[in-house]
Amino acid sequence: MNNRQALLRRLPSVDSLLACSALQEQIQTYGRDLVVEAIRSQLELVRQNIRHLEATDISERALVNGIADFLAREEESSLKSLINATGVIIHTNLGRALLSKSAQEAMVGVAAAYNTLEYDLDTGKRGSRLAHASQLLRDLTGAEDALAVNNNASALILILSALAKEREVVISRGQLVEIGGGFRIPAIMRESGAELVEVGTTNRTRISDYEAALSDRSAMILRVHSSNFKQIGFVQQPALAELTALARSRGILAVDDLGSGTLIDTAQFGLDHEPTVQESIAAGVDLVCFSGDKLLGGPQAGIIVGKLKLLSQLKRHPLARALRVDKLTYAALNATLEHYRRGEALVNVPVWQMISRPLHDIRETAEKWAAEVGGTVLSGESTVGGGSLPGTALPTALLALASESPNRSMEQLRQTNPPVIARIADGRVLLDPRTVLPEQETDLLAALQSIN
Ligand SMILES: *Cc1c(COP(=O)(O)O)cnc(C)c1O
Picture 1: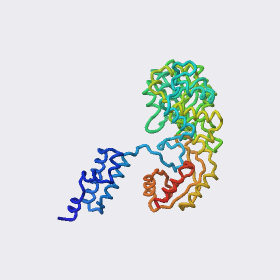
Picture 2: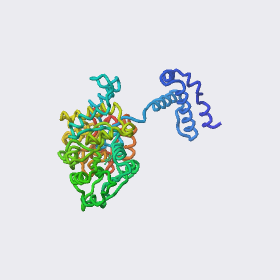
Picture 3: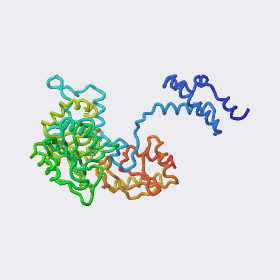
Picture 4: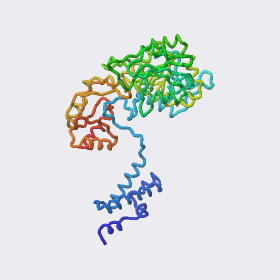
């Protein structure tokens, strides 16, 4: 009998492992069925190792450890918190905007107790959930009314379905954009039953192009902000006020999809000027839609602000019910908007805290990390991300770690608990303190130490 067969024979049975004292607590915690599955899987793994002649510890202790690891992995959610050291503030793959402390608390509050989601305390009767964010949004943007839906893509679908079905929507060829994940404005328009009328060229569209395209079948002029790309050179688009005046003179609607949408001027941080919601409303646009979890820094939502009459049409549309947001979103959205109303968004909304974080502060943090784990501090750039402000960046300081295999180091960092996401440049692993929360620093340094 060869050595392999001898080893295979010495493996304990499922029953004997189930009876061993080291696993009794696991059976209490996870239940017998899951522990049996873990034992089978661990035994199979060990058998495979033996067959492939890999060194394998088949002691009871090693088997029990493997079984415990399997059970712990089973329990782990696929949606985990992690450390974003990429310096991309609104990272689409890493959950976009982080919520402020009071937004987090507000969510917990409405999750844990009954609340006034659809209840009017003054009358003791049914109230409307749609009222929740609307007063704050009116105050902050100057619009007549507001509505929140699931996300900005839903906002567009609702606007087009309710106000342009089987009618024409005129849009510049320079604005037929893909918003990400394969979703394109023309496809969204088709799904909503609106007919797309393209005007102008990729780089230049004039007000006369719009004029020539309007007909009695036109329902609206749609402007889509080029939020995730930048056109430079021989380019031209009419001002929003011109589009609005034209729409008004023909008795049709002017709608502005701002994409990110911001209430604060980004130019004060050395970034490009991202058009603000207030500017669009002041330009006389009928409806403006934007995301809740990009530059607003709130929960995932699509926010529509504009004319009272149009918003009441939108609220009555059947899709409004299908696209409505839940109490957790309202709680977080209101708390986020409240920061803006109090003029404290820069200090309390994480997206703005990160954008406005002073360079010397970031550099100090990078130097502190270097003192602990080695590496050098470099000048670099952070980006806003989330399909906002393409081509502009914020100066930052980076911790650069030399590595024989940067890809391998990145992989190891992804396996730590919590996982760390970094970036690579010039054969080095780079970590940007701008997007790392102060309370994550200890874990980050432990992770960096563990991979060296
Ligand atoms: C991001 C974006 C959207 C989609 O917003 P979501 O909130 O992700 O649905 C739509 N239009 C533009 C211009 C965008 O930038």
